[in-house]
Amino acid sequence: MLIGELSRRTGVSTRLLRYYEEQGLLTPGRGTNGYRHYGEDAVLTVQRIRVLLGAGLTTEVIRTVLPCVRGTGTGFEWCTEVRSVLEGELASMDARIDALRRNRDAVAAYLAQPADGASRNEAP
Image (cartoon, rainbow, N blue to C red; front, side, top):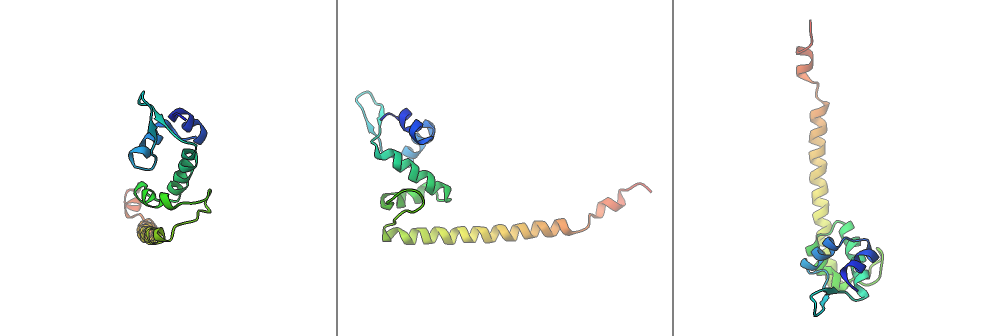
């Protein structure tokens, strides 16, 4: 199938499909005319990419784990060797969440302080 049909079948723009190709996530064949040709399996691959992106994984991580993904939806069956990659990603996400919580608490503490300038700027 051509890129336009893959786009229609997956709901993903042709521009994004080209990006997936640049990132090594999709590998189309090329016709003699230079057009990209995708096999039927590309539809499932794009769906898997979308699910993994939705989980917050980067295209770099997806490139690593995608060859080991089996099944559809969120109930993937993983190869054992990618488990450590995903555990590392989870730890990284947890660290970012902790940092965001600390930042949020700091901003909330600033907002909880009385506004000093408000009483001084009021008319007598």
